[in-house]
Image 1: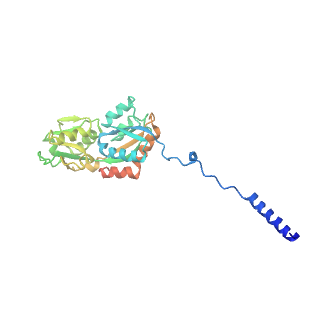
Image 2: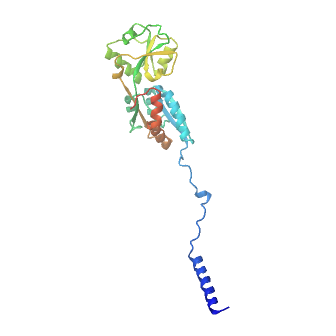
Image 3: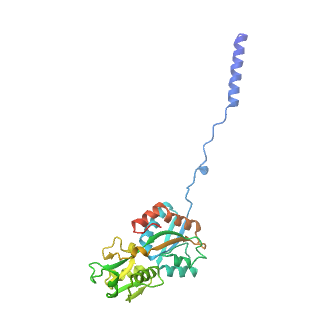
Length: 260
């Protein structure tokens, strides 16, 4: 081999070695343990105490929330807001409280220091289908068998204000602890009429609703709060956020609630 040929061969080998030395190693594929984990790590049960008038919409919200957070189960308790506030004050294991008025939320300020209003509601006169009592106005409630919510319950306080504004005095056949009980008696024709929330009669065929004069002047504002003693605070905060979200607000609007 000639000298020139040997020189070219040596230069080529050196270049090849230099190229190999300078090449960066190919990145290793990520190990399985380094792959992305689920962004939703919420788990457990969230205990929601909510006003009776929220049952239908909150059942739907709970289903949607559980679909978004598959590790969480929503357990809901529905009753009059005053009853729920008393239970929370006595240490009931609630994570979230949704009241039908701000007055009862204020009773648990120590447990719910930062409530947020998420919906509004007004009253209607509910009568059995066919309106056998011939009820047309609030004044008619004084002559027929009428059931009302108890004064300490939000729907009862709103009813008292509505009737007072209209100058109507009603001797109720019974005073119920939540609006569901009022509606149940009317639907069963145990009463000729009752004052309930507009949302309570949506989609029902066993009662009819009459919007009384002055209803728009008496609006209940619904606040919600994650409680300071929540056993599952992360899920509680997430549930409140869902109620306030576009999806939660859509569900509430479909049920007849007003925007906050």
